[in-house]
Amino acid sequence: MSFVISLLLVLHLLCWATSLGLWVAALRTKQPNRAMAHAAGGALVLGVIMMGLSMATGADGHLWFTLKLVIGLVVTAFSYVAINRREETPAIIWYGIPTAIALNVVVAVFGIGR
Image (tube, rainbow, N blue to C red; front, side):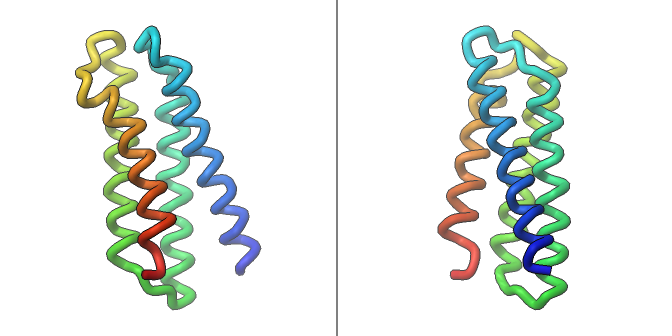
């Protein structure tokens, strides 16, 4: 089970890295790629699966899992809004994407298990 969770974690982190990288690539033109939203959605789904597996094995940290879930939902929603609005994406949505991704990483590193 540890191997499965580790594999899911690697895929989860790759999805977040892809989403952030595609955001950086689109920063100058504000023309988001659909893959950015799909990567954020993939990270969200993988995170939910990992959360379920971790809770099934008796892990604590329900507050941190819930906080990461909410942040993941925000990133995914913001990414899809940016794709639909293109150049007219509000700045709070556009710059909220990398901010929420970074916040998600900070919560993951410093929050879980404390």
